[in-house]
Image (cartoon, rainbow, N blue to C red; front, side):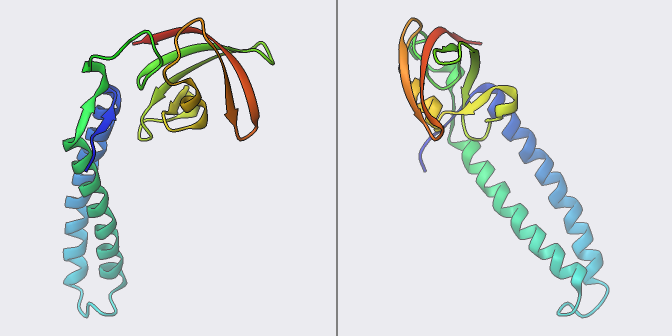
Length: 156
């Protein structure tokens, strides 16, 4: 599998999710065992539901373990910090509306637009990648083109 690039916060967030899922898995095992003791497994809704939920949990746990194993934390990588890359916080001005926008480029796992964190694979982030402060870019978005002046690129 290819490497997963994450910020330190994103890595810690995935580790916390993995820990919570493993705890939930242990609790679910107890529930399944209790349901198993109630009799016929073919008609035992609690047992069937528990096994289905366990399957979903195991899939997510495996996925997280693989991602964390192959993760590279971008905070520690030698990257050109003058350019917009994963982990950069970009301050820009929308040349059409005059509004100032601030976004942090993150992995898909970390993205939360309400907190100003956008996925590096989003159309906006793709249009910003590789640019530096002082540049003006035109980014094609689903809502139309936006002309943005890059004011500042920071790595926090």
